[in-house]
Image (tube, rainbow, N blue to C red; front, side, top):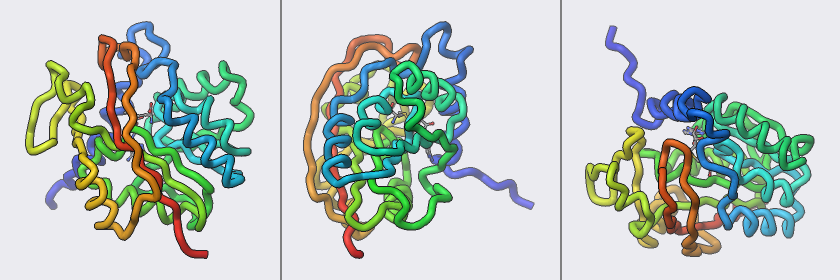
Length: 238
Ligand SMILES: C[S@@+](CC[C@H](N)C(=O)[O-])C[C@H]1O[C@@H](n2cnc3c(N)ncnc32)[C@H](O)[C@@H]1O
């Protein structure tokens, strides 16, 4: 029988878990550092303004965005496929005093196991650009969002620092493999609108945000500037 060859997106899951392995972090507390991305606060306000009860941070990674997101909901689901990441995220949540609000769940963005219409908001940061099949992840997130709820997600632009990282290699138009062997795709507004349209979605807003981040443990060892398109999709229907 032919072996089952995992898709590129499935194959990245254990690689990610390895990246958060405490022995790989060589004494650093976490992979991404503590400062949340600025847009997490904006998303939390949007969720709160729509009286969100349950917000899902997917993927939560090692938890940098959990503290601002906790302000946007009564219950914060923190989901990721990496147990190593979530172990760190749990400590980050405890340190920020929001542990009681957070529920950590092993969740695959392609198959969350959550019921239809079960969350009020999803914050999806730095995942879709790593996926060769973002369409199916978007459809799954839409399925679990309640009508009137929101998905807030980002896609890196070609102005993002990763494009000029000395260790990234180009494999196609706007497509790269980084030095951890993670797939990265960069989008312009037309690409993003085409992606959303291909899955029957329209963004209610698309913003461009640029911000600086300090070094990330072994992953990116210098101050760097990110740029993302950040889009919000509101689920329609009743
Ligand atoms: C670049 S990190 C971003 C983490 C977090 N959103 C942040 O901003 O710090 C990508 C994360 O996606 C997770 N991941 C990869 N594939 C996934 C999947 N299919 N479902 C859920 N999480 C996944 C990885 O474990 C990793 O934590």
